[in-house]
Image (cartoon, rainbow, N blue to C red):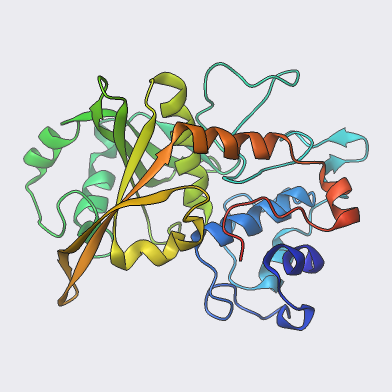
Length: 300
Protein backbone atom coordinates (compact mmCIF):
# COMPACT_ATOMS: atom_id res chain seq x y z
CA UNK A 1 0.00 0.00 0.00
CA UNK A 2 2.79 2.42 0.87
CA UNK A 3 4.41 1.85 -2.54
CA UNK A 4 1.10 2.20 -4.37
CA UNK A 5 0.31 5.53 -2.66
CA UNK A 6 3.80 6.86 -3.30
CA UNK A 7 3.58 5.90 -6.98
CA UNK A 8 0.04 7.23 -7.36
CA UNK A 9 0.75 10.70 -5.92
CA UNK A 10 4.44 11.08 -6.79
CA UNK A 11 5.55 11.01 -3.17
CA UNK A 12 8.85 9.86 -1.72
CA UNK A 13 8.77 6.83 0.54
CA UNK A 14 10.11 8.79 3.50
CA UNK A 15 7.06 11.07 3.32
CA UNK A 16 4.77 8.14 4.08
CA UNK A 17 5.37 7.20 7.68
CA UNK A 18 2.48 5.55 9.49
CA UNK A 19 1.72 8.75 11.40
CA UNK A 20 1.63 11.07 8.36
CA UNK A 21 -1.74 12.83 8.06
CA UNK A 22 -3.12 12.88 4.53
CA UNK A 23 -5.02 16.16 4.83
CA UNK A 24 -3.06 18.15 7.41
CA UNK A 25 0.47 17.09 6.38
CA UNK A 26 0.16 16.19 2.68
CA UNK A 27 -2.67 18.59 1.77
CA UNK A 28 -4.95 15.97 0.17
CA UNK A 29 -8.39 17.14 -0.96
CA UNK A 30 -11.60 15.09 -1.07
CA UNK A 31 -10.88 13.63 -4.49
CA UNK A 32 -7.45 12.48 -3.41
CA UNK A 33 -8.92 10.96 -0.24
CA UNK A 34 -11.35 9.07 -2.47
CA UNK A 35 -8.37 7.81 -4.48
CA UNK A 36 -6.94 6.36 -1.24
CA UNK A 37 -10.15 4.37 -0.74
CA UNK A 38 -9.80 3.12 -4.30
CA UNK A 39 -6.17 2.10 -3.82
CA UNK A 40 -7.06 0.15 -0.68
CA UNK A 41 -9.95 -1.59 -2.47
CA UNK A 42 -7.76 -2.44 -5.47
CA UNK A 43 -5.27 -4.03 -3.11
CA UNK A 44 -8.01 -6.30 -1.81
CA UNK A 45 -9.13 -4.44 1.33
CA UNK A 46 -12.58 -5.56 2.41
CA UNK A 47 -13.30 -3.40 5.43
CA UNK A 48 -12.52 0.18 4.38
CA UNK A 49 -16.22 0.76 3.67
CA UNK A 50 -17.27 3.90 5.52
CA UNK A 51 -14.32 3.72 7.89
CA UNK A 52 -12.66 7.00 8.82
CA UNK A 53 -8.91 7.50 8.72
CA UNK A 54 -6.51 10.43 8.97
CA UNK A 55 -3.12 8.74 8.81
CA UNK A 56 -1.50 6.03 6.75
CA UNK A 57 -1.32 3.83 9.83
CA UNK A 58 -5.08 4.14 10.37
CA UNK A 59 -5.74 3.27 6.73
CA UNK A 60 -3.46 0.25 6.95
CA UNK A 61 -5.26 -0.89 10.10
CA UNK A 62 -8.63 -0.68 8.33
CA UNK A 63 -7.25 -2.92 5.61
CA UNK A 64 -6.00 -5.70 7.87
CA UNK A 65 -8.93 -8.05 7.09
CA UNK A 66 -7.90 -8.13 3.41
CA UNK A 67 -6.87 -11.44 1.84
CA UNK A 68 -4.44 -11.04 -1.03
CA UNK A 69 -4.66 -8.53 -3.84
CA UNK A 70 -7.92 -7.77 -5.64
CA UNK A 71 -9.74 -10.78 -4.16
CA UNK A 72 -12.16 -11.56 -1.36
CA UNK A 73 -10.35 -14.76 -0.51
CA UNK A 74 -8.51 -17.65 -2.16
CA UNK A 75 -9.98 -18.26 -5.59
CA UNK A 76 -12.81 -15.74 -5.13
CA UNK A 77 -12.89 -12.82 -7.60
CA UNK A 78 -13.27 -9.22 -6.53
CA UNK A 79 -17.04 -8.44 -6.79
CA UNK A 80 -16.25 -4.98 -8.18
CA UNK A 81 -14.73 -6.44 -11.31
CA UNK A 82 -11.15 -6.97 -12.43
CA UNK A 83 -9.95 -3.48 -11.67
CA UNK A 84 -11.81 -2.67 -8.47
CA UNK A 85 -13.24 0.79 -7.80
CA UNK A 86 -12.04 3.46 -10.18
CA UNK A 87 -12.17 7.20 -10.64
CA UNK A 88 -15.29 7.92 -8.61
CA UNK A 89 -15.25 4.85 -6.37
CA UNK A 90 -17.21 1.62 -6.20
CA UNK A 91 -20.55 2.69 -7.62
CA UNK A 92 -21.00 0.58 -10.76
CA UNK A 93 -21.94 -3.06 -11.01
CA UNK A 94 -21.78 -5.34 -14.03
CA UNK A 95 -23.61 -8.49 -15.09
CA UNK A 96 -21.61 -10.97 -17.17
CA UNK A 97 -19.29 -8.19 -18.24
CA UNK A 98 -22.04 -5.81 -19.32
CA UNK A 99 -23.11 -2.59 -17.62
CA UNK A 100 -26.65 -2.74 -16.19
CA UNK A 101 -29.36 -0.74 -17.93
CA UNK A 102 -30.51 0.73 -14.62
CA UNK A 103 -28.09 2.49 -12.32
CA UNK A 104 -27.55 0.94 -8.88
CA UNK A 105 -28.51 3.08 -5.92
CA UNK A 106 -25.85 1.95 -3.49
CA UNK A 107 -22.10 1.86 -3.00
CA UNK A 108 -20.10 -0.39 -0.71
CA UNK A 109 -20.76 1.97 2.20
CA UNK A 110 -23.93 3.93 1.38
CA UNK A 111 -27.36 3.58 -0.16
CA UNK A 112 -29.81 6.13 -1.54
CA UNK A 113 -33.46 6.13 -0.51
CA UNK A 114 -36.43 8.40 -1.15
CA UNK A 115 -36.97 10.95 1.63
CA UNK A 116 -40.03 10.34 3.78
CA UNK A 117 -41.70 12.17 6.63
CA UNK A 118 -39.46 10.49 9.27
CA UNK A 119 -36.46 12.04 7.49
CA UNK A 120 -37.70 15.62 7.85
CA UNK A 121 -35.92 16.35 11.18
CA UNK A 122 -32.60 15.15 9.76
CA UNK A 123 -33.01 17.08 6.49
CA UNK A 124 -34.09 20.19 8.39
CA UNK A 125 -30.97 19.92 10.56
CA UNK A 126 -28.77 19.69 7.46
CA UNK A 127 -30.43 22.81 6.05
CA UNK A 128 -30.19 24.89 9.25
CA UNK A 129 -27.27 23.73 11.39
CA UNK A 130 -24.23 25.97 11.76
CA UNK A 131 -22.00 23.26 10.28
CA UNK A 132 -23.88 22.72 7.01
CA UNK A 133 -26.70 25.26 6.65
CA UNK A 134 -24.54 28.15 5.41
CA UNK A 135 -23.71 26.25 2.19
CA UNK A 136 -27.09 24.67 1.57
CA UNK A 137 -30.48 25.90 0.39
CA UNK A 138 -31.18 28.69 2.87
CA UNK A 139 -27.61 29.99 3.29
CA UNK A 140 -27.89 30.49 7.03
CA UNK A 141 -31.56 31.48 7.22
CA UNK A 142 -33.78 29.42 9.52
CA UNK A 143 -37.19 28.77 7.93
CA UNK A 144 -40.09 27.36 9.93
CA UNK A 145 -40.53 23.61 9.50
CA UNK A 146 -43.76 24.15 7.53
CA UNK A 147 -41.96 26.21 4.89
CA UNK A 148 -39.07 23.75 4.77
CA UNK A 149 -41.45 20.87 4.14
CA UNK A 150 -43.31 22.84 1.43
CA UNK A 151 -40.00 23.71 -0.28
CA UNK A 152 -38.57 20.21 -0.20
CA UNK A 153 -39.66 19.22 -3.71
CA UNK A 154 -39.83 22.68 -5.27
CA UNK A 155 -38.08 22.66 -8.69
CA UNK A 156 -36.60 19.23 -7.88
CA UNK A 157 -36.35 16.41 -10.43
CA UNK A 158 -34.98 13.74 -8.10
CA UNK A 159 -33.51 13.59 -4.62
CA UNK A 160 -32.39 11.00 -2.11
CA UNK A 161 -31.39 10.65 1.49
CA UNK A 162 -27.94 9.08 1.79
CA UNK A 163 -27.77 6.34 4.42
CA UNK A 164 -25.02 4.16 5.80
CA UNK A 165 -25.64 0.60 4.71
CA UNK A 166 -24.29 -0.76 7.97
CA UNK A 167 -27.00 0.72 10.20
CA UNK A 168 -29.32 2.84 8.01
CA UNK A 169 -28.22 6.09 9.66
CA UNK A 170 -28.78 9.14 7.39
CA UNK A 171 -25.58 11.03 6.56
CA UNK A 172 -26.54 13.31 3.67
CA UNK A 173 -28.89 14.53 0.98
CA UNK A 174 -28.35 14.70 -2.78
CA UNK A 175 -30.61 16.57 -5.21
CA UNK A 176 -31.04 17.13 -8.94
CA UNK A 177 -32.84 20.45 -9.37
CA UNK A 178 -33.62 23.14 -11.96
CA UNK A 179 -34.00 20.63 -14.78
CA UNK A 180 -34.17 22.05 -18.31
CA UNK A 181 -35.36 19.07 -20.30
CA UNK A 182 -35.64 21.02 -23.56
CA UNK A 183 -32.03 22.15 -23.54
CA UNK A 184 -30.56 19.15 -21.75
CA UNK A 185 -29.04 20.38 -18.53
CA UNK A 186 -29.75 20.43 -14.79
CA UNK A 187 -28.02 21.22 -11.50
CA UNK A 188 -26.80 18.91 -8.75
CA UNK A 189 -26.44 19.69 -5.07
CA UNK A 190 -25.23 17.54 -2.19
CA UNK A 191 -24.68 18.05 1.51
CA UNK A 192 -23.29 15.62 4.07
CA UNK A 193 -22.70 15.49 7.79
CA UNK A 194 -19.26 16.73 8.86
CA UNK A 195 -18.05 13.18 9.54
CA UNK A 196 -18.54 12.23 5.89
CA UNK A 197 -17.66 15.55 4.23
CA UNK A 198 -14.04 15.82 3.18
CA UNK A 199 -13.27 12.12 3.54
CA UNK A 200 -13.69 11.35 -0.16
CA UNK A 201 -16.60 9.01 0.52
CA UNK A 202 -19.18 11.67 -0.35
CA UNK A 203 -17.78 11.78 -3.88
CA UNK A 204 -18.65 8.11 -4.38
CA UNK A 205 -22.27 9.11 -3.80
CA UNK A 206 -22.00 12.09 -6.17
CA UNK A 207 -20.62 9.82 -8.86
CA UNK A 208 -23.42 7.32 -8.24
CA UNK A 209 -26.05 10.05 -8.54
CA UNK A 210 -24.47 11.43 -11.72
CA UNK A 211 -24.63 7.94 -13.19
CA UNK A 212 -28.30 7.76 -12.23
CA UNK A 213 -29.07 11.16 -13.80
CA UNK A 214 -27.25 10.51 -17.08
CA UNK A 215 -28.84 7.05 -17.36
CA UNK A 216 -32.41 8.27 -16.89
CA UNK A 217 -32.52 11.65 -18.67
CA UNK A 218 -30.96 12.95 -21.85
CA UNK A 219 -28.96 15.68 -20.17
CA UNK A 220 -25.69 16.60 -21.83
CA UNK A 221 -24.40 18.66 -18.91
CA UNK A 222 -24.84 18.83 -15.14
CA UNK A 223 -23.96 22.00 -13.23
CA UNK A 224 -22.64 22.16 -9.69
CA UNK A 225 -22.64 25.47 -7.82
CA UNK A 226 -19.93 25.76 -5.22
CA UNK A 227 -18.72 28.69 -3.12
CA UNK A 228 -15.09 29.62 -3.49
CA UNK A 229 -14.35 28.73 0.14
CA UNK A 230 -15.32 25.09 -0.53
CA UNK A 231 -13.45 24.71 -3.81
CA UNK A 232 -10.16 23.48 -2.35
CA UNK A 233 -11.92 20.26 -1.32
CA UNK A 234 -12.20 19.22 -4.99
CA UNK A 235 -9.56 21.38 -6.69
CA UNK A 236 -7.62 18.40 -8.05
CA UNK A 237 -10.57 17.42 -10.25
CA UNK A 238 -10.37 20.57 -12.39
CA UNK A 239 -9.91 19.55 -16.03
CA UNK A 240 -10.38 15.87 -15.19
CA UNK A 241 -13.88 15.44 -13.76
CA UNK A 242 -15.24 18.94 -14.35
CA UNK A 243 -14.48 22.39 -15.70
CA UNK A 244 -15.16 25.80 -14.19
CA UNK A 245 -17.61 27.42 -16.61
CA UNK A 246 -18.56 30.52 -14.64
CA UNK A 247 -16.98 32.53 -11.84
CA UNK A 248 -19.28 35.17 -10.34
CA UNK A 249 -17.07 37.62 -8.50
CA UNK A 250 -17.79 38.50 -4.85
CA UNK A 251 -21.21 36.88 -5.07
CA UNK A 252 -21.46 35.32 -1.59
CA UNK A 253 -20.91 36.70 1.90
CA UNK A 254 -19.69 34.31 4.58
CA UNK A 255 -17.32 34.52 7.54
CA UNK A 256 -17.10 38.28 7.37
CA UNK A 257 -15.98 38.55 3.74
CA UNK A 258 -17.16 38.14 0.14
CA UNK A 259 -16.43 35.04 -1.93
CA UNK A 260 -16.77 34.12 -5.60
CA UNK A 261 -19.47 31.70 -6.67
CA UNK A 262 -18.17 28.98 -9.01
CA UNK A 263 -20.34 27.05 -11.45
CA UNK A 264 -18.76 23.76 -12.46
CA UNK A 265 -19.90 21.59 -15.34
CA UNK A 266 -19.72 17.81 -15.77
CA UNK A 267 -20.52 16.85 -19.35
CA UNK A 268 -21.95 13.51 -20.39
CA UNK A 269 -18.92 12.93 -22.65
CA UNK A 270 -16.41 13.62 -19.87
CA UNK A 271 -18.32 11.47 -17.41
CA UNK A 272 -18.52 8.56 -19.88
CA UNK A 273 -14.81 8.86 -20.64
CA UNK A 274 -13.99 8.62 -16.94
CA UNK A 275 -16.39 5.69 -16.69
CA UNK A 276 -14.61 3.98 -19.61
CA UNK A 277 -11.17 4.53 -18.08
CA UNK A 278 -12.41 2.78 -14.92
CA UNK A 279 -13.76 -0.17 -16.89
CA UNK A 280 -10.56 -0.53 -18.91
CA UNK A 281 -8.23 -0.60 -15.91
CA UNK A 282 -6.13 -3.76 -15.54
CA UNK A 283 -6.53 -5.93 -12.48
CA UNK A 284 -4.99 -4.92 -9.16
CA UNK A 285 -2.42 -7.72 -9.39
CA UNK A 286 -1.34 -6.63 -12.89
CA UNK A 287 -1.03 -3.01 -11.76
CA UNK A 288 0.98 -3.95 -8.70
CA UNK A 289 3.60 -5.62 -10.88
CA UNK A 290 4.19 -2.50 -12.97
CA UNK A 291 3.35 0.34 -10.57
CA UNK A 292 -0.04 1.74 -9.73
CA UNK A 293 -1.76 2.92 -12.91
CA UNK A 294 -2.90 6.18 -11.31
CA UNK A 295 -6.06 6.71 -13.32
CA UNK A 296 -8.09 7.86 -10.33
CA UNK A 297 -9.14 11.46 -10.12
CA UNK A 298 -7.03 14.05 -8.39
CA UNK A 299 -3.44 13.15 -9.22
CA UNK A 300 -0.59 15.56 -8.74
